[in-house]
Image (cartoon, rainbow, N blue to C red; front, side):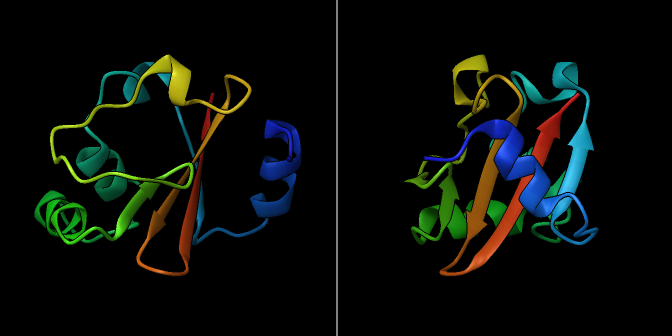
Length: 96
């Protein structure tokens, strides 16, 4: 598997799918809110609909509960998370 640094390097030049956010804003935030902050979806309600339909993934794990929050343990190597919306829309968030 890839390290957090390798994942970041793969996405870093992609302004549409790569976002850096302060770790303090990520930990404890709802995944619907994070998805909206990173423009992975247009709104929190759109993220919630994707979750209910089974089309929302955090680090390749399906998320179906709209009140799921991000924890420190979700960060790959303590620094990055990957959101997938639908079958092939990937978004990377680096915790800074």
